[in-house]
Length: 140
Image 1 (cartoon, rainbow, N blue to C red):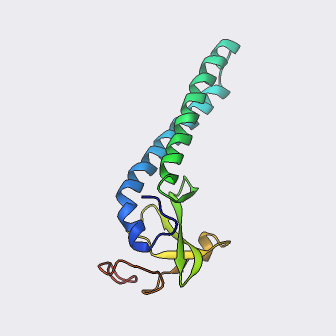
Image 2 (tube, rainbow, N blue to C red; image 1 turned 180 degrees about the horizontal axis):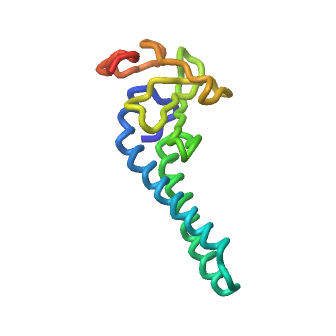
């Protein structure tokens, strides 16, 4: 469901799929790290070539998993933290809806050129066409 702009409710609906896709990113990153360590410990050119081909495959899998996450319309800001930003409109202004793995729903936004440290809590009514069935933002 790629859209131009997302509401907090839109992002919340995607979270089950996002969590599954982020797990794939994490698995592929661990495989990549293992292959990189293997590459550094090779003892011959032939072994290096073999391990390098394996690393190339794992790298392709990693980037494909990142693309799968971002195909939902978000930007993966940190694969280590599972940090994502979705484009949103807050009172007509372009902002990022910010979600991190471990959070039960999207609760924060930040400005276009701000990062994680600039996150601000979502206030009811800030986002057009919000899902009114969502619990109030500071609760649950």
